Image 1 (tube, rainbow, N blue to C red):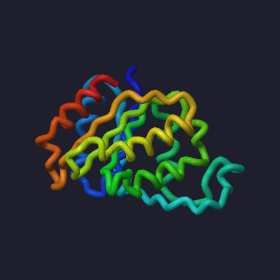
Image 2 (image 1 turned 180 degrees about the vertical axis):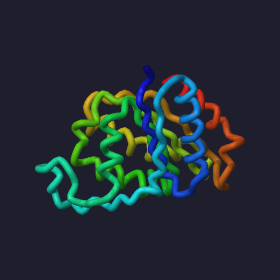
Image 3 (image 1 turned 60 degrees about the horizontal axis):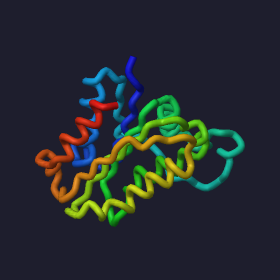
Length: 179
């Protein structure tokens, strides 16, 4: 039996560059016999953390939105793929909100494999490092026994669809195959 792979696509556009990389990773993961699911975060109703602190006592959020479902899937997954477009050197708000809202159950997100898919208009991969450090801050500093398995940088991708001609497509697919 393969692994349970959860792909979190924070793209604000279906078929956007980072979302397309998610689809390639998904294709590879499924072809190699894994159970894989992509969640398009834009389709979910996920509110910002209000900082009320109730989750630390109750281990669930008081907000009645879709985050409980997403968080449950993160806990159940063997592999979590986090994909975001990079805006002004950081992950986008959709992904950061998911990370912030993981607080009620973050201690249960343990022993997971992580992959990161990042895209940006800038052609310099170094411009994505700050966003990657944001992911690593969450996984390495907050979670128990995370295992980073791969990073794909899609750079120089200003227009929607530009990723189709990028080496990042093949990289995302091949990473999915290796899960």
